[in-house]
Image 1 (cartoon, rainbow over the protein chains, first blue to last red):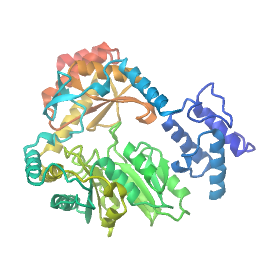
Image 2 (cartoon, rainbow over the protein chains, first blue to last red):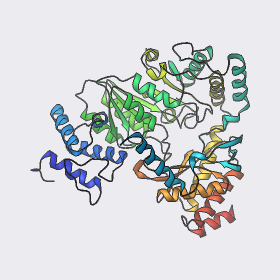
Image 3 (cartoon, rainbow over the protein chains, first blue to last red):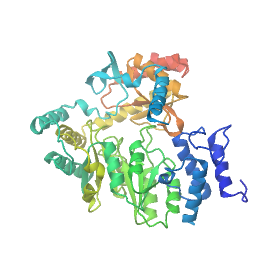
Image 4 (cartoon, rainbow over the protein chains, first blue to last red):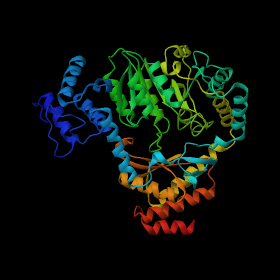
Length: 83
Length: 410
């Protein structure tokens, strides 16, 4: 994760670490169904994402997040609000 | 995926557990003989898997109070607290709980689960934040889901992590409610409550502390008021939530607070308003149990003697446990199969415990939850340790030499 990488790339790189070996992460990836994470693991990943980006991602905001693209959109919106 | 497919998936996971031994959904106690003895599917069982910390379920005073109230007022209230379901007993119990905690007022809910839903939906509103420990009980997570506030998790038992997350929200206008538990029900560990209270105080105005003392009421604190009392921070604990289904030995829940106007929550908390109130019998036995705790008859001291003995014994056998002696002793096992296997073998040997496996556990741990009661005798504890040692070594979970020496010296 270099400073030059975009926020989207950083989110995907961090998700790759949590998703488990052999799981290909793309914008279409379903975060629960296509990875080895259960609901608790996803919440733990989000906690790390909050620290990495220094933002707050309320659990309620995740209710509509299904795919990686949904997550990227949520992060973009939250970063915009919290700047 | 449709409902039929979803149910079939659930059935498959249950069947895979069943394939390893007993079907948990088919087990039922056909007779209870005492707080620590029962008959389970025809077999005599010693109970090390209840939340009956003080052993009050068979206490004479609690039972006669329940019987008396049932005879006098009937088997149920058939109504909610805000309609026809508030009897004199409900109000008297609230007054007794407020007095027990030395707080301004108490609100009684129908269960401990409902108390958390009621508080977490009744206190915070739109624009507020709930900051919850990552290892919070399901009732806290469900309350947060129902609440209009936004929920943020912080790392388990980490005041520094909480402070960091509160810091990110410092420019947000809403109130912030920190939620922690006295004793965590999975690993039996306690919250560093004094440090959490410091974080709350340093965060300033508009930050409140909610403490769920479900497993610590009657268990911790000089007069049994829980971790808030033991840590010496009762004044900083703005809302204390609890249940009657553990040390109190019946069913029901409550929240107690010093905040002026707290009673108004009765008119906005839907889980308080839209469910039937506690039965007269449960109300009366809860009241009797609070009187017993206030009398300080010695159950709490006996509980801790038993906790220390069992915790030490389980570690001597060679099992890995949670971090500290507690009425909930978690034996950490290598995988869900080992947990289910051990649980099954212990039932065959007449020892009832509980299993907890992912995703219900923190960090995907597979646990056997052994819980302690003041009502356990020395002989029951010694036998439980011998059984754990024998079955543990037979299953290859502990070294047989340590297990055998314990069984012989016991």
